[in-house]
Length: 253
Image 1 (tube, rainbow, N blue to C red):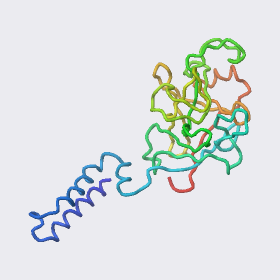
Image 2: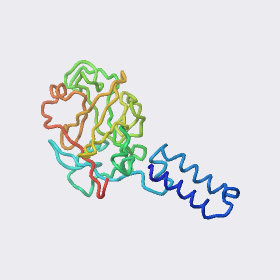
Image 3: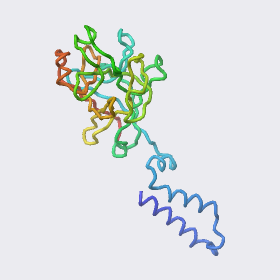
Image 4: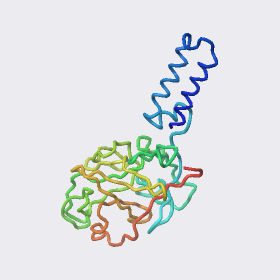
């Protein structure tokens, strides 16, 4: 970025040097453009990239490994087709976009956008849908009593779903393909390790605390997320090794 700024300054000096009387008759439009570009260099990598016509996003697929291996996609045939699934057919893997041309310039937390299905045109972000203050008393709650909210100290869990876009560090304000009156989604939850390209997620709990999520295959590619894997196992003991998500691109990133 310093090189870019110095190059613009050099261009201005060349114009002045090559034009007799340039100091007195410089084109104000030219120097207005150069000045605005130089002043804006430090403001945003994305702004500069847009100015010079460079891509500010990267597209890829998300590989899933662990108890189940495959790719994140959409399965409309399944009765629970409103969810994001682990599928094994690469040709049906959803293409996702992250908001940077290089991993090193990604925000610390961001949205992952994917064209899941025309069935859900409003829900094109990969998110997690969780319950909000739902009290459990019977079989539907694994015979547990208490709240199903995702939190660090509970077995509470949510579902991996197509969601609408939400702001970072905001508790379950979004809607999704699955959400109802007692559910809400979060989509600005993702972070990436640039050495491994692993995607991890952090849920914002009702009290504002950040809760790292663990992803599991509940059954047949149907994925859930929890903030406390050990407590979750007490209500879902058949779940195996947690899932790892890896962002895979076809080119450099």
